[in-house]
Length: 283
Image 1 (cartoon, helix red, strand yellow):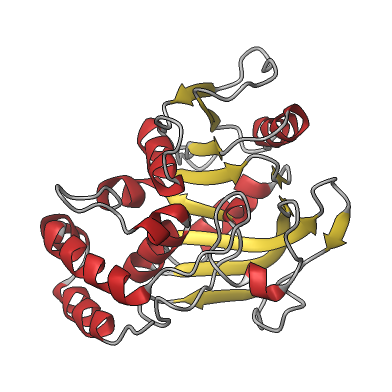
Image 2 (cartoon, helix red, strand yellow):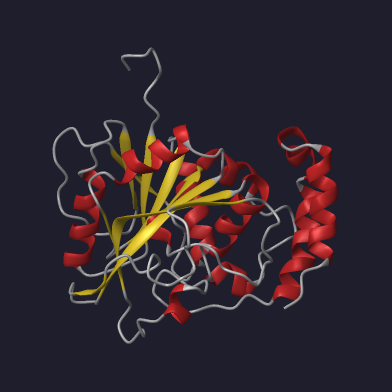
């Protein structure tokens, strides 16, 4: 503000369900961000504790019971008004400086569609399992690591669980919607965050950094392992392995349906590289 620059509005959307304690913990962390321009979005059917006077929050319609995770996430993105959006599974918690630190890397680091941080892994009861899980895995060799579009394949997973990610919201709203007659493959829809991460990565790139700015709660019965952390999984902790051949076919039709929006956003070279990259995807 002191430099004549507008303060960006950031949306934090709670997704999923949980008991009263889990909801309260997630909501408290979303409302307690240091960044002054945050809005919090809550599923219309989620029972929540009273929020403080003046808190910027609203409800969004996530659809009827049984609606897949990806559809619920896109509904939240459409209802939000922020420049960027954080999807916060109920039970997970953001550190107080989460939004500020992500904005720092957006404004001083690479121009990307999604930023993600390391995670602090917790048991369902709230006990610490591991601090800085990815920094110790060997996978995140650098303190700040940029992954450009098409550097990885669809079968590779380069992001942590959703609570550690902040997405450019306009990208998701403009390009995530299915075109007429083109439903998401079931395994892709259930994985929820798999498509937003892939979309952001392969259109705009991804930046990951080591600061631990959130606590991710393991689902009951889930094994704390890098096998779980390095695979796409549902907000409730089930690991999903999208059928790459079927998803690649869907992406070809998605590309054709969004050709106009993609042409306005991305250069011709991207269109050519996307086709070549997609032909190389194998399950």
